[in-house]
Image (cartoon, rainbow, N blue to C red; front, top):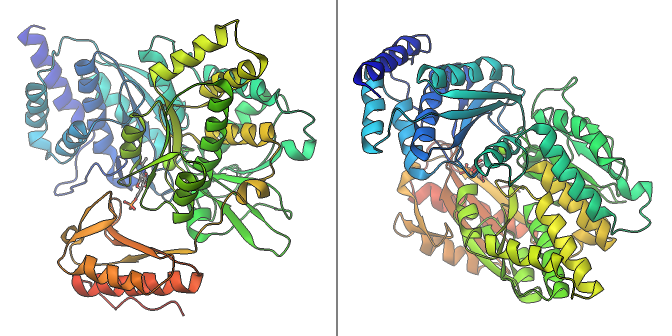
Length: 551
Ligand code: 16G
Ligand code: MG
């Protein structure tokens, strides 16, 4: 590009950025999953993320995604997530650039922009393409417009998908950059690919009754509900959805959604649940899902990400055996995974288990190391990754005319399962369909699934300290290195209880230290969590009142 047109481009950025001014002094961090805060602080961030996505697109010579959403946060908040070429989350290096650009004061924006261009040696004459999506928040319309403005001010091309779930946008980006190999980059293409795979799988489940096909879905009053309505006809009554919290009256994420259900350990409001009925909840941007039911004693049973990982990995392992395929399967968890799930997977299922730091990108990367990597956070975010080599072996075996019927059936099931899974990121809709298909094929009820293992009682608490960075952890956040004495204190507290485990870590999304404890009884888990909270409060600079006991 000639110097003159490059200068004209920067002039345009400079002019347009004045329409999206940064409030002086405001600093925000690209956190665990993008920027997230009250929507009123985000207009300049969105414009600048449009700029950054354009640079990233020029650098990678691929389409980049920008999703406007604040997931499970309250309706008044908003946020933005950047999506890399293969549909994965943007790399750590560029998260740093995002923070750098977001916090540049108005008069140094161009300087910071040029700094990134120089550091990354970006050819500004390269074309750029950015896909943009948004959730249903009232603020999302104008904020996504700010992203579009950012892209066009740097001469990038945009495709505005409007209202889509976060995983749908990840899928579109991957479809585009793989030139259709992953599917066609339209919402309809997504419905077609997933529903076809689902219908193929459920053909293998005989004599399902309408009761077995029935599933109650809590849409968190968000985008997931809208998209389930659109997808429903594609499923041809093989799944009979009863949708509540569909956004027609309630507020987004308010007393409903996956996060509410997981944290409160109770059913969402606005859902009429009969005894034993299978239910699930999406979060606000439909990248997380949890299942649950209530028993005849009125007791609430949660089936979280650990139970989902167990169900799916058990099913896949069985199919691999039946298909006679020697592929390595592993489950990736975080420190929050219930100890019972890890024990069951390692000791009973003989599946390799690996533990990473909290945050989807860490799990995703770890899962890429295996032929088949099943990863789920306890909170319900997760998916399954199949290596290229594994997919090739499966596809070749499908075509092999020499295989016997049992092997053929198993390998076809594997093939359809791959098509049903959104491998780019955790996807509530895709995960839900996988779970429903597995339950159907194996003839399992939600109670049978729940009975695979029993969760250890656990408790999570938060402690406010003056600077949470004084806590440094190691061993996938399971041990505290600093402050001195804290890990010793935790170790001796844990020894007092049976089947106990506890760890602390600074939150990546809130200004608190998180405490997790599990033990043989709820009372013991509660006491241990409280005692560890006190140790954090005393040794890591607690502020405000001392943490109080539960009982
Ligand atoms: C973000 C992460 C989630 C993680 C949570 C931890 C993504 C898409 N989301 O929501 O995976 O569990 O942060 O929050 O990566 P915390 O650091 O406050 O405990
Ligand atoms: Mg989410």
